[in-house]
Every structure is written in structure tokens, then in C-alpha cells.
Amino acid sequence: MIGLLKQKTPANILILFVLGILIRLPAFRNAALPKLDTTNDAFLYREIINALHAINGNAFFFAVITYVLLFTQALQLNKLINDQRMMQRNTYLPATAYLLVTALIPDWNIFSAPLFVNSLVLLVF
Amino acid sequence: MVMRPVRLNEWLICLTGFTSPYYFYAAYLLLTDNWSWYQLLQPLMINIPSPEQSIWLAASGFLLVFPFLIGGYYVQENLRRMLIQVRKNWSLFLIFLLFVLVIPFLSSKSAGLESWMLIVIPFAAFHACAYLYPLQRWFPVIIFWITILYILYYQYLGPGW
Image (cartoon, rainbow over all chains, first blue to last red; front, side, top):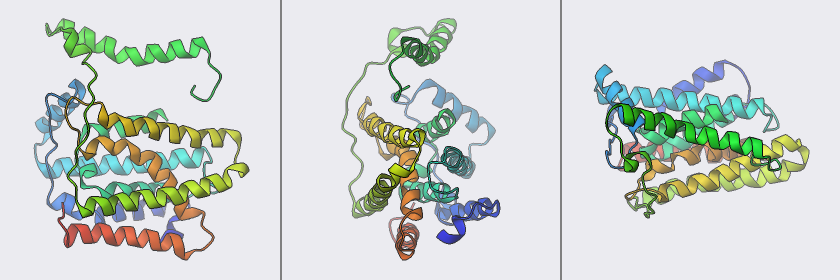
């Protein structure tokens, strides 16, 4: 699998997408609603949660949004590392590592403000 | 900016960028009659995060840190073959990691594990090096499959999500 993901072929994006879903299937089956802490959480996060609730308040919907964010972040990080030539060769290993690392801690697979901030940080990088 | 010599212009632009969201938020509060200094500038509080301790958390922590250290070793080994800009980028990742490790402590109440999510970016970069650089092919394969098997075991035979 590592050998397959070391190659920079577009098919690896699909493999990563499927791998990411397979290793976090329970996150979709036992989806959890995001925690909204009115004392700690900032204004922008509360507005985003309210807007998403208005579209669909289902926990599965939030699980899908979370996975889409994680997958796009993985690809963003991968693109960043490849464009900056930070590794010896261009591979899909950073994206793979991102999806594996985020699957290690369940709290990192629930929609939260830091998850959203990760996308913005990767954009800024 | 962090890696370059200090230039006042650049730091002023950085300060402007840092304060712009506060400016717009202050305008929003004023226009919606919710103005208060406390809402705009919440006091800085320090709290110790208290995630629930368990053997699963320890195992996850080990699987996070061990490949990170391996990746760090290989980045260090290959540093002399990298361009200066690339070396600075790796240093930037490490400085980012240092700042991000502190963030969960600056919270009005005890933060959970989700506050540490920002460490994923540098950790994933170093993990990727642990998968790419080792000359012995079996080593990254073993780390990869142990991680996958642990994730699946945790979900289906452990406490699960």
C-alpha cells in the first residue's frame, strides 16, 4: 500500500478517499453532532454551526462535512509539501499520513472549530 | 517573516492582518447593539486540559509520536541535501508545532482533545517522511499496517466511536 501511495498518480486520490472512509466507517454510522460551547467557542464558529443546522441538522450530515474537510485538508497538505519540494520526491504519503493521524483520535473526527481552522491554516501556508 | 531579518514594514503589515478580524468583529458588535469590551477582547486565561485518561489514548499517543520521531530523524539526515528554503519550511513546521501545543492551555475552561487538532499538520508531514525515507522497506510498511490495525481494533473491538 505504501508503495502504491508513493507514486504520484491521480488514481491515488480515489484510493485515499476510499481508504479514509474505510478507516472511519463508525464515524458515519455513530455520527455525533458538534459540541457547541457558548462560553468558549467564538462567534464565527457559532454562526457556521447555526447555518449548517439550518441546512440539515442530521449528525450524518455533519459527519460527511467533517470527512470532506479532512480529505480536502489532506490534499492541501500534500500539494503544499509537493509544491515546496519538502520531500525527496512527490508522493501521496503526506495525505495518507494526514488521514491516518486524524483517525487515531475520535475527537478529531467530529466537526469542531479547530477542524475548520486547519483548512484556513493550510490555505495560509 | 519568522525566518527573515526583522523589517518594520512587514511586521506592521502582520499586525494589520492580525487586528483586521477584530476590527470587523467590533464593527459587527457595534452595529448590532451588542458592544462590550469583554465580547471583543476576552481575557487570556490559562487552564490545564484534562482529556480522559485511558490506555487507548496512550496507544494513540504512541502511534502519533513514534513515527513523528522517526520522521524527524530522517528529515534531519536529509537536511543537508535540501535547499535553504526547504530547510526553512521544515523549521517553520516545527515552530508552528511549538505554538500549537500551547493553544489548548489558553482556554477559559479545560479544553478537550479537539483543541490539539492543529498539531496534525506538522505531525502528518513528519509521518510522511517516516514512510518515505527508511531504506528498509519493511519498516514503514509495518508502521502503516500497525496504525491501520490499531484504528480498526479500537473502533470494532475497543470502546469505539
